Amino acid sequence: MNSSLMLRRFFCFNVASSSSSITASSSAASNKKSLVFLGSPQVSATVLDALFNASAAPSASFEVAAIVTQPPARRDRGKKMMPSAVAQYALDRGFPSDLIFTPERAGEEAFLSSLRALQPELCVTAAYGNILPTKFLNIPSLGTVNIHPSLLPLYRGAAPVQRALQDGAKETGVSLAFTVRALDAGPVIARERLEVDDQIKAPDLLALLFAEGAPITPEESWLSFDQKALVLHNKVRAFAGWPGTRAKVLVVDNKNSKESTLELKIITSRVGPDDHIQGNDVNDISFIKGALVFPCGGCTALEVLEVQLPGKKVTTAAAFWNGLRGQKLKTL
Image (cartoon, rainbow, N blue to C red):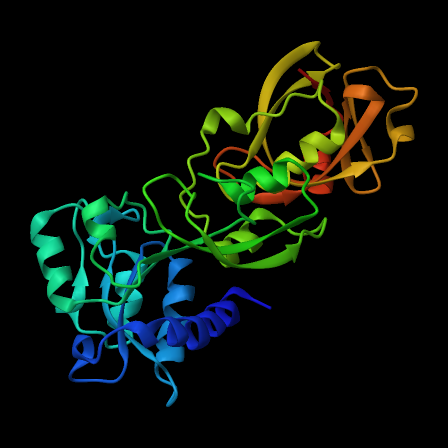
């Protein structure tokens, strides 16, 4: 079951049953309970879409009363001020612009005053990107629910998807949990499990698990080939998209005895058989059956299938190898 269906199930049943304790005066003009959504990047629009669609059903118990998102920022090459992906999606759906709030901080009194006036029963967050203070959390009568991309209590905090992939976890998932001041420590309402297939890369999971903007530093992107191939392969999968994984290799031209250092971005990889490196120098990078074979720690081999040079497009290992024109590669 995907996250959209999980949300629909939760909001159509859990909210309906929970809201039975709310007095009728809280929704005098409508039988539907008011919900405020908080999210910012493109992946959050998946959640908002599910909420819009579920609220449009005749039997829906809630409606999206307002949206809270990050302020407009300069994006793309033109550096134009652009609304967040969630704000743009809401506007495209015809949602009223005066009900899209973009406070710099969620604790701003003017914003909180507007939120109180809406009298929301429930707030839902998905990659909003702002800390919610206690005075915010006290406003919705049913509380605030966060969509967290892990099976809580595993992988609390930032970058849970990438860390699960980096650890080689065979299973991950999505949790719905009430938001409290402590980080990802609120009571868990529901969990949805997902198996992590070896061919799934982080962007595929990011689109589902709302991990955009996770604070992984570019310094973490470098590969160290004294580690085992499986560790490096998991890192390639975990950091795919951003910041990516990189390696510095030595290019040796035996014709004129010149050496130079080259930076490669590793796009896709797999763990190769150990016999791929037998008989080679400990630092020699070879080319076998369409893959660059990097010798790694523990006499293991990492097969790299796609690479990217700085400022260039992604290319296959075969095309890159042919471009070397007989020059040799070594790990550093």
